[in-house]
Image (cartoon, rainbow, N blue to C red; front, side):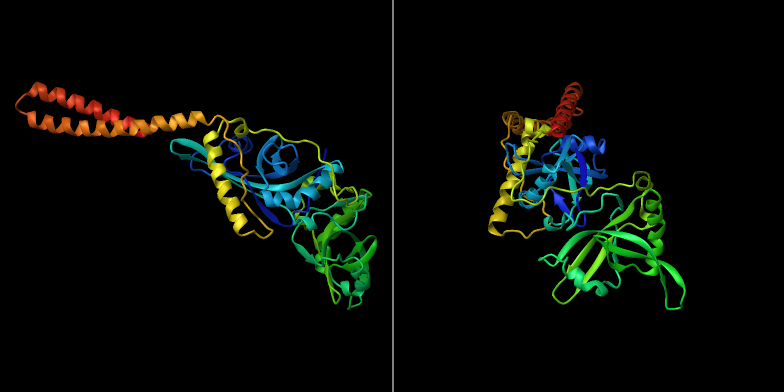
Length: 388
């Protein structure tokens, strides 16, 4: 399916630990102990209604690799808008920032990872209007104030949603105006649904005029993301667009229109089965699953006692059965049995050294044999200690 870039004006922590070590290592490309590595790129958000652990799971995938999932509260908040994108025939994608480091704990190598996606709140994911089909949409950037919007306040008040804030798709057009000195200059008008709603400052206009001319030469309008805010008394508008120096060369090659039209809003959208097992689902990390289960139990208990507010969250590791749990249990039992042996070897080594000192000068041959045995037991104790 075609990618649908969700509004990324915000950030959200997603769950990585105890689940996706193998997949994260594939994406990052190998990890070294104690050395953190990072990866940035786009990831797909995939609802999994057939997930055997939680039918409301939303996984975070880089290609075929599941590297994270949304926490349970966040998955419930984003389920409906993500379902709408998928039902419309698109794959919802967001920027992903992944940091990972290989650590050793109790002789076992584990991946310590943190992942953050750039995504707006659920009610700000989609624009209030449909962008023009013949337009190139600029990448999002820092906010830019739209000037003179009060001249169009009556029309803008009809756009502001009941929540008081909404995202919109605006278009930019070059226009000539006469300034206060009587000089004609080029400025950029800001339009909503082909109606002017403001303009950019003369200085800011110079940042966008070359881009607008380039798109026009390819028979395209220049579209940008914007935000409208208002109440019964006032209204304001900003646009979020990359300046000319920030626009990547690839944009000029592709001139993308990545805000396609979605299905009309509805109470429910069907989502196809999408669950794919990861390595830990197959029972290869049973010890780690138990750790994840314990963490999930604590997180759920805390959440029940004090519900969290909407926002970034790393909680809610889902309860998953630890398949193949008998092997780690046997390994732990063997390690526990070896610890007294190490202690005994160390004590025997100390006794032999003392005996060797006592026999020194009395029985040279016996002293040599005793010290040889002491060295052997000492090395054995050190070896077992390092193994544990």
